[in-house]
Length: 101
Image (cartoon, rainbow, N blue to C red; front, side, top):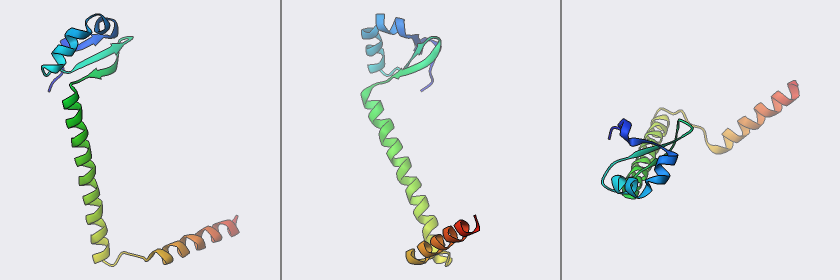
């Protein structure tokens, strides 16, 4: 949904007209409340906020699936190291860098 100029309201105007703003938001509008001329908060319907949170969780799940797929590709290509070997390699590097200093 696009935000129009009428959806940008100063904090003092929002305070004075909060009930009307709430009704507009409940009817589907989104409002940007400004403070000192800059965007401060957004006023949106609670159901829409729940929907936005659901979308964000789904996006995170898709990112996790993508990372898991990359990991499986690494396993298939043999680009893996068991945990003990990885820890020992880190310890050796740390030891070598502390001895060099």
